[in-house]
Image (cartoon, rainbow, N blue to C red; front, side, top):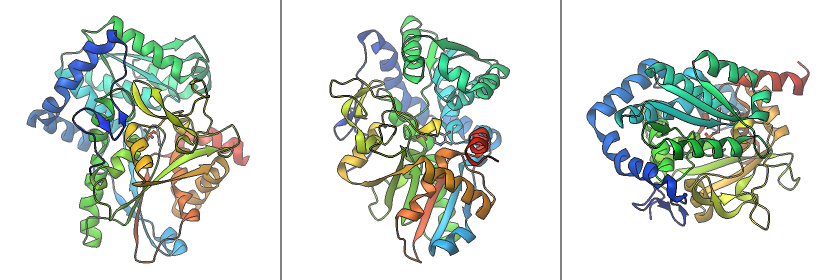
Length: 393
Ligand SMILES: *Cc1c(COP(=O)(O)O)cnc(C)c1O
């Protein structure tokens, strides 16, 4: 059994492309071309060169000595926080912008909630000199002013979504409407392993550089390629997909997925999709999502904007359903206290999303000889105001 996507675009029962007919030509163009183009040596060479010299890859695999001592196991951190723009998201936007160029597209659209994917998209559009339009809910524009300013500096146009709750799902609707109206010249960059096939697979492939490097780096440091555990936080699931990718079908490597419990799984203020979600369709794919009994999407909650998403990518829905991955949900309070702890113990101020992953160390027992790799998906600069308010710093 494989936990990777099949040729029809499914992970077990999850995935596929549940899209309006008018979107079909756009998605079909992508589906027919993405594997062919990304396999071309010229594509690979351009992708690798930009990852190296622009993003700063390979990111280090850092042995966290003080943490390891305290938890009596071997803990390595994959340092995605050192990527240009501060997180793993740029690995994916670099891949998709090269693909867009090769498809002859001149206009890029994206949607963003917290603004991190908008910034990563605006960055690569500036790099390539392409027009960039980012849809963002009006409420989110007010909440995320520094990222809106970054996008503007990078030359992107930020268009407010004024309908519904004026947040991420409304921005997504606007982006899809735009794509339907501009099928020829426009490319839609999706920021996580969500959306209709082929997006989840394509984004997972671009992020898979994370686990490719982990294998090479562990071989050098430990004399073996495979850790005992890989741990990552899951919003939509792209940093996690990248961290797991080359270990998916090797069941000796245990996979831990960490979701945001918010105020608590049963509090009504949560984003723990595996615990609370039911099968449904969101963003064009069949997956697990938080919804009411009549199928309306529930507004999720987490203190970390990047985990505040009502669904999870189809790969992760299948990892949950099959039991291949163990899912753990971590509250705001646990994550915030790890934000402080990691800062004090290792001199690393994590993104609040990433801080969730570390709380697994309090929830699980590891053996002294275990090799545990935690993906530090991003740095905490963007979260400083949240840390200041929370800890009265
Ligand atoms: C966006 C973001 C996430 C969540 O997105 P995934 O697609 O689940 O990886 C996690 N960590 C950081 C630092 C982010 O910026």
